[in-house]
Structures are given as structure tokens and as C-alpha cells.
Length: 332
View (cartoon, rainbow, N blue to C red):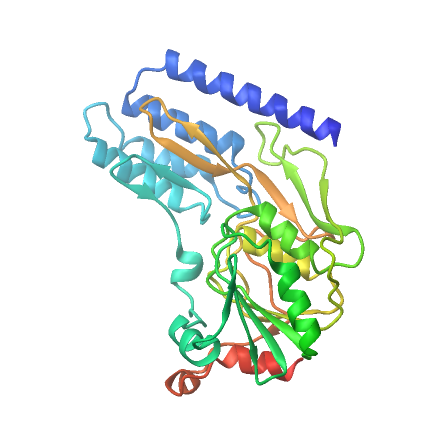
């Protein structure tokens, strides 16, 4: 751990020094901006080889579109198209007047989630709100917990576990559909509340060289028992394509537990931890600089697969029924 902290400190120091140096030495011109953005992605972005992206070819195809007399809007458009090819929700460029992004990982897929159905026909009027958790009992047999963002607190999970342990329900349904991520610490803590022993939650490597596959040695992140209330009953986790980033980490960690079943669609992925870089013109470039895998070394940048693939049935939607919740009940 001490070595890792020292390594990260050095990386942060050199990244900060590099940023300051480049801002002082490079004039704010489209040519300089283009060259710097191209270099950063080529040398520091972590997923070029995994996704088989030919970045040099992309740079070559767009270089001829750049000149120092172009408008900032045309310049941004070029970068937007280049970054879109990375197919990464953690890659963005913020200019103030626009924000580049690629959200095709969920926009091109079935949503498999209707919040109106959940609110009206499952949570109802008398559900409890404990921090970021919305929860209730279904059919007097199943605990249902919806967690919509890992940016919201989950410090009341011990209360939730104690409540449903006391009620003697069969198991718990944890619904994280449409949870786009947030705090990785919250995801780690939430998973830790359900494990009975210390286990590897996920592994990660850091980009340390200019080559596409120059990475540090793997570093393991562990989850270990947290909270006073234990949970021994079955757990069903509901997922869809809009689960991303910290949510993919959470599901990856939870799949290590023997009493967990994941139902729904594969997540959108988002396994690379992002950092920011300031281009010479002040625009903020965000990109993934790590790779993360499950305990066995399987990368989940492109998504975490469910144990049971289930899609929302159109006929169920018309009746106000959530197909995934109903299937989850049958598996508890």
C-alpha cells in the first residue's frame, strides 16, 4: 500500500508539473491543441489495444482539418468526432460551450427500466428513504431496495439489513438500473456490507509508459465485512445497460459473493478510472488511465454480464409490471 501511494503521488506530481509546463510553453492555437490531444490519447489512454483502436490513423485522417484560422466551434467538432471513436463514457472534452461524450453504450440499447412503473406499482406511497436508498417490502416476502446513484450516501444500509432481517423476508432485491455511477468508495462500502470475509473485489493496473500496453503490476482492492448487521439471505441485483462506472465496479464485487445472482442486461461498463488534462486553450480533456478487472482478471470496461439475461416485456409494461422484478421474486 505504501508503495502504491508513493507511486500515485509521483504520477500526480509529474502530471501536475507537465500540465503547468505545457500551459506556459505552448501557445493556444488549434494546431497545438490538436497535437497535444492526439499525444495524450496515444500515450496515456488505457484502452486503445483492448478496443483495437487505430489512433494513429484517426489522427492522420483529422490532421488535415486543423488550421490556425478555424473557429473554436469547428475545432471542437473535430475533437468531438475523434474522441467519439474511443467508445468510452469516461472520455470527454469540456469547452464551456459544449461537452463531448459517447453515451451509445446505453442510448442504442433497450432501457429495461421504467421509473414510473417502479414508483407507482412497487415502491408506492409508503416506502422508506434511507440516505440514497429507497426501499420497501414486496408481497410481505421480499425486500426491495432501489439505489439510483453512487453519489448518494448509503450509510443507513445497516438499518436496512436489520429491518428486513427482523421481518423474516426470503431475500433482498437490489435494483441499480439506470445508476450511472458516482463515488467508487460508496460502491466498495456497499459491497463490503454484504461480504462475510475479506476477498478481492477487483484488480487494477495504471498506465505508466507511452506504449499501448505499458502498465504497472496489478493492484488488488479488497472488500471486507463492514457494519454490525450481517446478511445471510439470497441477494438479487437488477442491472441494465445504463449501469456504468462505479455501478459496474459494485456488480463486479458483488458477483464474488456466493449468495448473489445478477439479473437483467449487461452493464454499460466503464472500468477505467478517469483523469483530467488541460489543453493549451484551457479546454478540459478527460480520459481513462487505468484498466480494471474482476478477481480473475476479466476486464469489464465493455460491461459486466448478468447471471440471468432478462429483458422487459412490452406486454408487462402495458400492465404496469416490471418483468425483471417479477423474475427476481421467482429466484429468491
